[in-house]
Image (tube, rainbow, N blue to C red; front, side, top):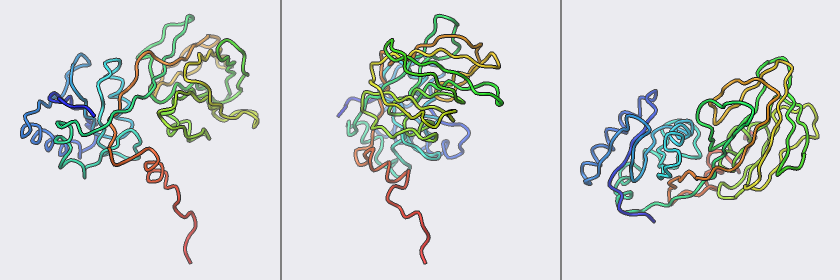
Length: 276
């Protein structure tokens, strides 16, 4: 439980028309409960809590803006499939009242940091879901030699390699055959993307591990994608991926667990055949 919430930063996906109507309702409720609701002009802001309007993509973008501030983020799902955004429009009636009274829970989610002594990385070097090393040229694979805590693991010949968090296990990693991992576990998963050998399987390792990657490509370049933010780099470089020294705090709906989200959003237990 958390209480004393009076200052709320609001972020939304401007591409969603519904975001404007939801924001209007939130401003009205904030005024009614004596709370300050504002839209930050830049990343230099302070707040007791952050409210995010959109889907998981919007949530990831907002998590980057919050960064190491460790301000709890509450996601209202007005987009598509969302594991990080646990509230819906149906919750709006009592949402800010519950926030004001501290009637919510916060879970801590690991973040990954990527670094390199061989090149200067562009953009924000942190990811809540995954760090993906991907081929730049559509016609050829890349070679990624991987070591864990200084011990050589293997060389992946593939379209890429995903180093993911438990939070990201239901995102890109899942789409290429990775396992679902309960978000609160202290772990990472290495998931190859279209590997040349069918023996290459996803591998779950400890959350405190340091993953070192040496990337080589026929095209001379490759991509680093952090939660979908991609930049191209020259190859034959070494990268390190490790757990960041801060966490993302996610506000969770008291009536919805991770397992219920799996059932609802992945339709577990639903029949996959037609009725006669």
